[in-house]
Image (cartoon, rainbow over all chains, first blue to last red; front, side, top):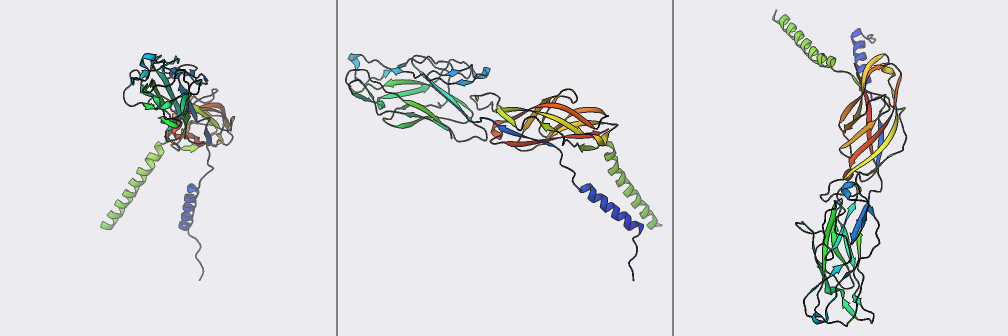
Length: 218
Length: 161
């Protein structure tokens, strides 16, 4: 026996199979790939009191550094020292407008503006936190002290509704305490109104202390 | 006789099927990806920056933009002395919705496209083996989709007339 030579039908079938295989084969993968690389994707900005922007955000303004340390103070008349009536504190901060849109958000001298943002790429992350590093006490020139816990604040903002990103609170002596948080990629701001509890009689004098606010991003 | 009729019907059936397959194929232009291997980037990667440096109160305003310039060189030798339409195709891909716009030096048309679509950049006769132009692209993507450097691919397609 010998094998039959391929018929014309067989040859056609082979050609068709060959063509099908050729058609299924992949050609060169033409195309251009551009790599999109986020540059300086993490940005944080915190303003307590006065701050600096090149202009309002909605006009393309960009945040700047401002090293000013604002003062919040109260002068207590001798007649009312320690009478238990909280005394309003005022500030030398002149920051009233939000750098987001120029809206007059806070009122001075009664309120201290606090605001900022935490910019990052990728999906929403856990919130950035703002802490206050608080000394144990305010001191005067003779070493007498007033606990920082005698100072509290309320939080609001002109035209605001709902909760504040920097809610009301009271300083904790010698602590690093959380005073607010910022969700990623949102602008957050509040106006803080400070008061002195005035429920003790300290030594006479000028008492000072510095609280440092810090924004920590995850 | 019945068998003959059946055979005739079967032939007609296959003929109908054949026509129904061939007809639409004849109506559509053939689309072929163009050899763009001669294309060169003038920058190694696309630096994406926030379009606005600060976010909005509502959490919007997260668009990132970046530009890159390509010296595009398309090998159109297979279509020489014919006419065709060339499209820029930006397939749907990771990291998600992307758009790009571009300007040219005149050989190709300027335009913009969103991922998952293609846009005509040239229509007319193919009279040279290569079509070249310098295209400046601006990519736009939501920053929430871009936690790290991310490759984005597009290609050029020829529709033969």
